[in-house]
Length: 553
Image (cartoon, rainbow, N blue to C red; front, side, top):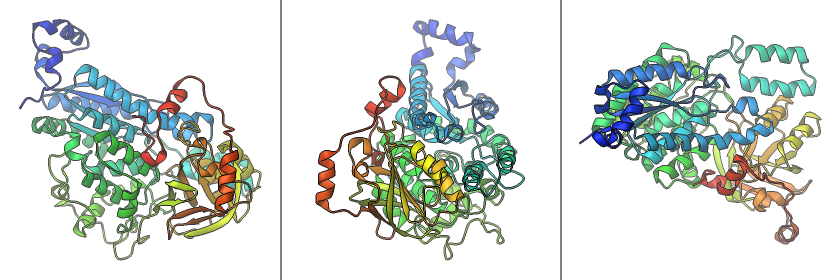
């Protein structure tokens, strides 16, 4: 079987001389035309610490591919920074970037006939965007995570700074104290260091079988990460020789493994959105109810930020996620027969993994978990007929009933929080932030962090048709569908309405009579304005519900 299924059509024979001449212009030698071509999709950029080092990793990957007997070809795709744009209009472009990344990888590889692909990502939309592109192409592929940032000297990070803004607004710290923390909390390359969305997605991809074992927890700046990149060449050559494609790896059972690991790690709500979207691209039927089904039997084991005390870097020091996965496999919480990018099954990869050191306090044993079942709760009810996703650890309780404080944008809600207009017993409602309504489905880290920073995390709930950063914690519900832009029930809430969130029964209810709900629906008019042109306008026309992963195809 040929391992040059695609490149041969571009470079073989006399009629492709013109194509070869172009490739000679970028450094190809005659011998390279008989080698499998492997595209390297790099997300390098200096716009964010998450990606500022990925050029160096990409160079290592290119060298390893060339050494394997293949020919590496490096190209770039975009990244944006959620952390920098958070709380601004710029955040509307964050989820859009997932689609742009997927589209650009598919476009370059599809155009240029690469036989295999290695994608390298840092900031959190890089991961699902890359996997979606690799799924659509369905050619031998590997994902490499750029790695996690190391903790600061005072054990603070980006999310810490966000919560300190709430403390400043409350008057607990001065502006000088806030700036002092700001200056030391992000210390070099790598993605945000807790179990936020980047580390959640990196871990989920390792569990899915699409990255090399142990790669998801590695520090961005480390010898381990260099070795991960150096191993990629032989790994992709092996996949090409086997003709092992993403569709052979990303099966329904593999997605079930991925969900289970996300839950065990206490991962981000964004994983729900992204895994459903990736599954769609590879043709696997995955929906919200799969998260509920798996969540009933999977405990939360990790004591990692945002609601734990540890960083990903510390988890890496004791072995990363593979010892946890070995324990889960041994207790029938994972499917061991799933194929991976090593050319071996998950069970084979985990066979010789050593357990964690006995003294560690980061991953709890199965008989003493952080939480007996999933922290990711899929809620239904008259406020969410198509579902909503809650991140409820139980630390703030599991049931909340309170009265609505309604805002039609993140900016309105944030101003009210900082002006101390939110009190215990309130349910903050921020709407028109859904996939279409934003458009772009902004993350609500700043308002939820401000609530936590003001000491209201156990007394105030927060619901939105937008989404949350992996750094968000508290009594929060997002992805409410249908969204306000479509006239969903969240659009009908009025100030003072009683709302119940019940994570035991998985219910989200607006406590008003059915006839009142119908009356409001009949009178409702959309107050939201939409972009008339540009990428956000195009996105609005094609994006589907959050309950379907906010896909655009």
